[in-house]
Image 1: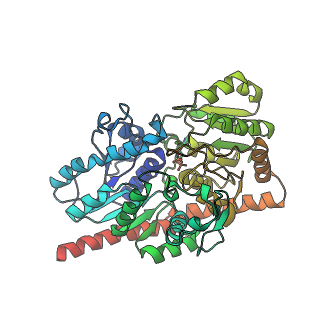
Image 2: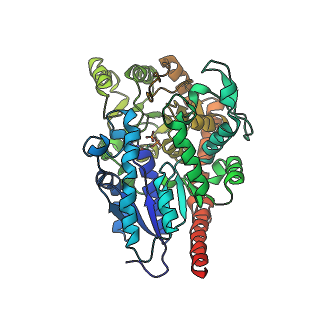
Image 3: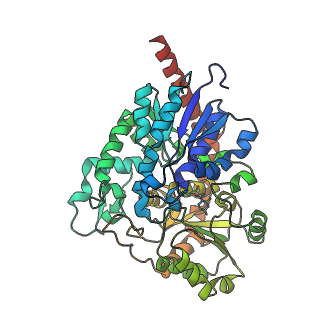
Length: 494
Ligand code: UDP
């Protein structure tokens, strides 16, 4: 039951681990700030991601899940497929997004019978329908942006300037993004799909997104101000004051078991993993993991594997499970790769307890695809990054890490390497020598490496400070809640 005057937020996540995980973390934070939270979800996602909050709910935090069925068949989805990482083919992402729109009617029926109505709808940026629902019931809607202000500003200046249209024919010719605090250069083949006219329906969807964004009451960002102050300021100039950086959200999971329960059961025993890490020297291990959705070509992964092997350093390599991973697993087996590297390697086939691994002192470098959650988790852990972006805004995140924060080294990927749309081809192969070079630069003991490590540690301290009481993210969370309370008071006065 809802206490009198307690705010009630309806939180609506989108279906992929990279979106769900930070959204449920945010739900926990809101509840810790006294907000009653209802998370709108679907049966399989409720099981997968609900477990992240088991302890929080058991300890009495006011969070509940509201489950609605997803009509899989109607949208041509396999039974039980509710998340992008479970799709047999990435090209079905559109169908999954469509299936999610069917939640609208059910959610509206739920709101209809609620008295009082929820005070706020906090929905993933990429979902369009919550905007309509919020309008219908006159509830303030806040967008949850699982990315960062740097990405928002890159998108913003690209959209305004259309600078990518005036570069030559070559997809690999670099150009400067105009009007940003730093000189950021990209190539057309590194841009998110939103800027690729070849992908059907993309420009229409993006236009709708822009309208939806402009109508929202505000935006919550999983970042912290000290990390990208210049870009937060610029973004506020575009959006107004209702931009609240409240991250890093992963830091709200503090103890060991909370760090393991992240959307999938860990494919490695927690204690064995810790024992292996304990047996390694401080700062010596490279952790290589490419997130939850990227389906990297086996030939590309082989180059990575060979580089990890020839680096002669201890490493953890997470080999993603799911569709189209048979080829790489076959290669590992045929080459006896695990046997070859067993003295200094731990292979995780499936899902790694990433937060637990990253927070171990043995980790010295994180080879990442630059998904924002992974990037930020790396920042929190205070380790330098080896960056190998695959697609979407991951190329922006690489620039942020390598050029602005100067805590990472790029392996030099020039192109998106994930298949999407009709005309796309897998990007160019990054050769194992390029991985080795980047790994060596990050791990070397000289001045440059030392300074990079020092900067990474400083950022980690800043991140932890931001979420403490009095820290910028903590204050922003309070501001956000106050804003919704004021909004409520104003409505009552009218
Ligand atoms: N993750 C994990 N274990 C894995 C792979 C991923 O716990 O084996 C988590 C990771 O910690 C992060 C999320 O899944 O929180 C992936 O989000 P990210 O934005 O990094 O990448 P995406 O999967 O969306 O590309």
